[in-house]
Amino acid sequence: MIKDKMKFSKDISNKLNELLVKNYDAEKGYINAIENIESDKLKMYFKRRASERSEFAKELRTEILQYGEIPEDSGSFKGVVHRNWTSLKATFSSNNEEMVLEEAIKGEEASLEEYNELLKERNLPPSIDALLLKHKNAIQSAINTEKVHEELVS
Figure 1: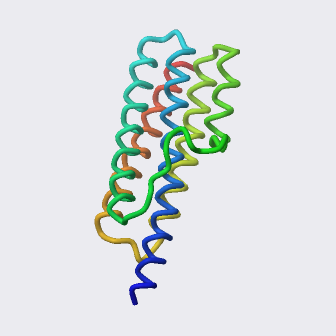
Figure 2: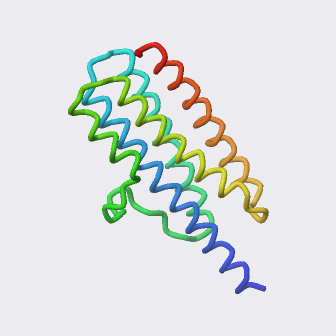
């Protein structure tokens, strides 16, 4: 029984660590965006997104620690930056805010898929389930807002 519980917590902790790394990626993606765009409105918006993702990471780290596992360190993910957040960097050279927003939306949609996949797990503890749902809803809201912003810049 204890062995099953250990496997269970290790399994959940691995999945939470994957989400944790993706949140680090998103935060870094938004910080890079802030440094590479002109619009003060977008800078403020991206600052809020980066701050939110930093908060998500802290919450995930806390959950992982509660399972007696070790959370990934923001500097430890071995160059496995999420594809969408990497392609965001490529759009900076064009300095096209519409393209930057499109890439941010793609990154958020990929994050949403990750959260949806994990939320399909039927054996998540209620605290983790509630946390993931809260994050997922915030990301969906961000996508909706980014799409509105995109309409405004295009």
